[in-house]
Image 1: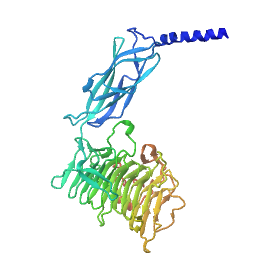
Image 2: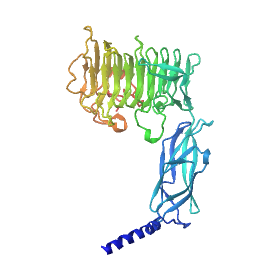
Image 3: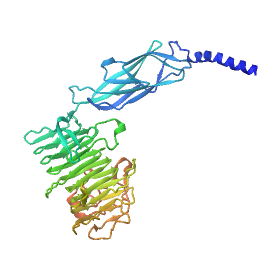
Image 4: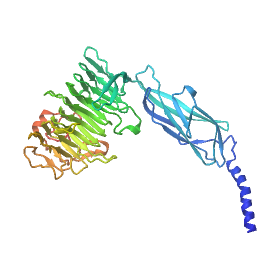
Length: 496
């Protein structure tokens, strides 16, 4: 017992000594710190909009502790970068000790101030370290970009039927027209409204970037014309709608902004050669109560939505050579009646995000229940799909919701004409009033749905199976290829 007690006492007497030896500072001028990277690079950041936070590591690879006498931003307090060392934000730090074989985090973010340049510009700084007389640095570099900004006016209030409200901005309009060009990006905060009597035209190659929750809204009597230039400009020069976070991590993240909303009473809306991605709803078109199309849409891709790619409520929509893809709920949702006419389109839903999808790629509906509990019906005057693909990763991708009959009137007209359909046992593919030469449950063999590539591969069930009259009416595919020249009649947005 006495021997054991002496050993315990000896251990505790030696412990502080051992501890001191472990934390002894190295003062050797040849001893430096190391970094996980020698530079931190940010993708394009819009002026006034902060970047995502990135980080790098500081390593002490020596056995003894090392003291960093100074950590600072090279541009000091005027820097547009912000740093945080091991949880503490500041522009400079002093006497930071790192134990032997230990490390620290340095977090970096940037907000770019406006300047007079339209083109992207490079913003550089560095994090400078002084250790044992050695000066080391990690380069910081970001691409900045000026833009046109649209901010809500606190004096303009839009009140919804449920009592909620938002502030909005009115897009300026001269003599009934205004044009957004591609000289600088256009960045929308909150609701930006195309007012009654105004037509907003968005030209080829224009980028529109929407902040979290932002909406481009077309009011009653207003019009939206999105014109990506057509095949004369090439399919690589579309109008693009996406979120305003340009970092690579946000490239394909759904739900980053609200929607394009064509409200009831908006007129002569058209979208051609556009890419609309990463929102809650791509395009919502509401009823206008007359025979004129609420929307004509062609040669457009709408993808990566948490809600729906294209959403019609009692609307009239004509579409051709479009892809509606990868949505948590619906690629196409056509509800509360209306008239819908789609040709040479692909509705493809291979959503694999969280939560899992339980709704079909395409849903057609002709009734609704009002807030007072009363049910109402609006006829599906026509829902025509010619040479279309409706496919995905569920057992069935066709949803028909016409079970409600009100006052013995239940008009529900739809037709799939030379289409490739994924249908479960609830769909009656034999009814000639609704089906003409459909191809059921034969894989169209998209090349790579995981990266939203819905071109069709050799052996696809869609090759040479389309309707000749439909193809003749819409002879140019989404990639500007001539459909007729090869003598094939392929189904979907892309010619093989």
